[in-house]
Length: 60
Image (tube, rainbow, N blue to C red):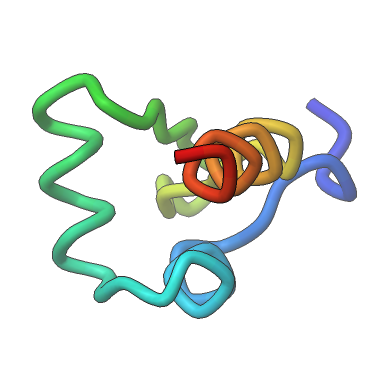
C-alpha cells in the first residue's frame, strides 16, 4: 500500500464537500469504498476514486 495514493477521510470530505459521516455512510452502503490503514485502521480513500467521483458529479 503506497500511502501517497490514499487520502484521509477529512481531506476526502473537504474535496467532495460532504461530511465525514456521509463518507462513512457511503462506505457502509458500498457507494464509495474505504480502505483501512494497516496500523491504525483509519479510513482511507484512493485519490483516483475521489477524482473519478468528482468527474462523475461534474458530468451530471
